[in-house]
Length: 568
Image 1 (cartoon, one colour):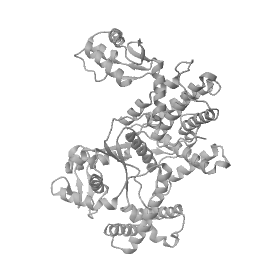
Image 2 (image 1 turned 30 degrees about the horizontal axis):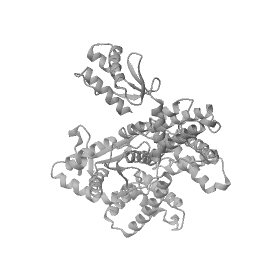
Image 3 (image 1 turned 45 degrees about the horizontal axis):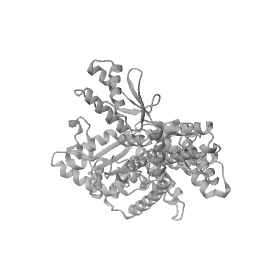
Image 4 (image 1 turned 180 degrees about the horizontal axis):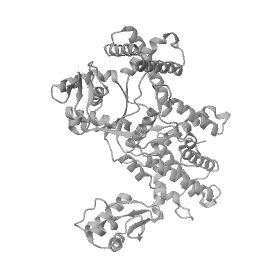
């Protein structure tokens, strides 16, 4: 309906004022007057030298003559806003559409058949899965689902740093505490705790001990060369433990990756690319290293090969870009990282543009803010860190304390608890615009009273409980008897497809969050003030409305990567 109204408004404006640009004219959902509103009269008034009210009156006169299907009336509000009121039958038809489409409701085709690769999460073996990885995973998974919901063919990619100085530090530490290395049959969390201890030991030694620093640099060289069998053995063990641990976390988060890329795969290609383009003038030598002269492009200079000839992250990312393109050529290739890396990627993508413009053309970098605890930012180097895994565990434990247990549904109960705990964190991340920092409040995130993921999950569970009771009583759904007329619930329901489209176009899952909170609030108010199962003749309609609410809540939660349990 939004698209129809926008088209008709622009057609009328062109007819009346053919010489005026219409780019800024929009039709949006209205929270106060009508179901849609247009700002066209306010925009045109200055151009045509008339008051907005006069312009609005001329436009509305012609719009009324069109008798647009689904529009009950068109009115002018305030200084010249044009408001559209939809018919009751329009909302009833939309209810039927929701029930008919079910899990497909809200889908669109704005990215139909577009090939999109989204790279996100990117944890480093030998280091902890920190809260930054949790944040980029949540955002990446939600965007992946939004693009898929809009017709794209999405491939999820995960790029992991399994080679480099952090690995050398961990291996140095593993050698120092070799006697406490866990046995092969030890639980994976104890194995990764050992790796974390080794990394911290090596990281501290690197900064505080010149001899240790020299040893770690030598280990780093040997890793790239694979020239030391004992180091190779420790490397294989640590890498395997880390990746196994990460998979457990991905499963809990509801993410499955199509491609795993590793720095050990990309560094050689990165070195080759840099050396080839050094002779072409893209790169230049500086103090024994090879740099990209970003300052010549209003950016900043960055090292791509260090003075020892080893590749930096920058060179590896060039190798990754080529590897991605060879593995799965796409229309768009997206990388999601914290905004701390924005300037880094501006240089890397500029270098890529000069080397391989076709590949660079489809590359996009989406950055996000930081997830912070009330105590501030933490460091994996010192060990003063709340890991992503520990944050998930704490949230799940708190959810367990808030959800009524049922001994007969022990396994199902644990899945519900996990879904609520994980969903609480995800919603806290996604409810704000991606670029903003977040101060994580654990108690608020698990509130069942509003502005949280569990509140939406609980609303859906309430709707499901009503539907189950209706089914037990043999009540069938019917949209034909509704003496109350159209409520806010119906008005909010039909907005879902346009909210999905906007969230997708703008890479903004927070629009879904805001919408779901609004729908949940409207339905809970409806539930509190309107008998549903005891309304006699009107119960079938109200059950229909309840079913539609549940469908849309589940679809919206799915797009956020959050489960929708039937019971809570």
